Every structure is written in C-alpha cells, then in structure tokens.
Amino acid sequence: MRRDVVLLAVCAAVLCVCDGVTFGRLCSGNSANSRRVTDIWGNGKYGASRGSRGHEGLDIVCSDGSIVYAPFDVTLHGKLTVYSNASTKTAINRGIKLRGEGLCFKLFYVQPDQTSGSVQKGRRLGVMLPMQTVYPGITSHVHVQMCNRTDPTPYF
Ligand SMILES: [Zn+2]
Image (tube, rainbow, N blue to C red):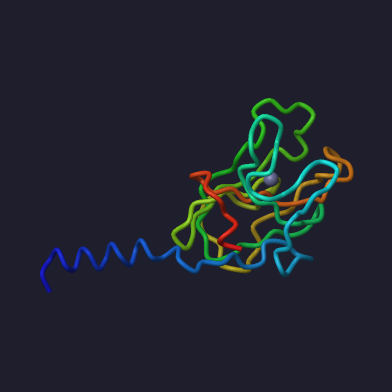
C-alpha cells in the first residue's frame, strides 16, 4: 500500500475509536448507570440550568461511600479540584481525570485510590464522597464531564 493510504487508514481507525463507546458500570449499587433526574438541587442532565450557566456534565446516581469503578480500561491523569473556592464543599472537592476508548473525561466527587497508572474495566477507582453533607437531599451522584466539555450523554 502507498504510504498516504496507510496513513489514512490509521487516521480513520483512530477517529472511529469513540464510535459506539458505552460506559460500563461506574458505581456499586447502580449497575445500569441510572442518571440523576430532578431533585431539590436541580437536574443531572447535560445542559441543565445552573444559574447563569449550563450543567457541563452528566450525573450518574451513586450513593455516598459507594465504590466507583473504571467504566472501561482507563489510564489516570491526576486528581482534580472541583471547586476553586469551596470552603463549605471541601468534603466533596475531589475527582480524577481519565482517558480510555479514545475519550478524555473527568469524574467529580470521587476520592481516587490512585492518580496515575492504569485501571482495568470494572476495577475500583475510588470511593464516592459524602455529598449529602454538602447538599442535603440531593440525589448523590458522580459527575461525568468530557475534557472538551462536550455532551457525554451519547456514551451512556
Ligand atoms: Zn453534575
């Protein structure tokens, strides 16, 4: 094959890797990746109202203290701070950045076991933080946000 044809084939394979990607189970107790719907604090869908801006992720139901799993084979790319000035939210102000299946995404409100290396699908990533202590009555959830802030919903 000519070199440009080979290159084209390689590019197509890389671009297509995200097509049909579906997140596996994220949280113990929620094998279907059920989404947060409306509660007294808002709605968990992408683009839902958050005051002056839109919700930039998708919320997957996860009870406080639950185990959070790798939704597919992932590599870990550091811990996150969710809120930049969050004196009242320190209990849940953690998360992790991941890559896998051609996607870059973040999980908020998770205390990660480790912040580098790789984790296989279905293996433990960490623990759901105590969201009820910060947002009483909310549907506790992991917030899934793509690194480029596009809509993660098609992957669920
Ligand atoms: Zn959210």
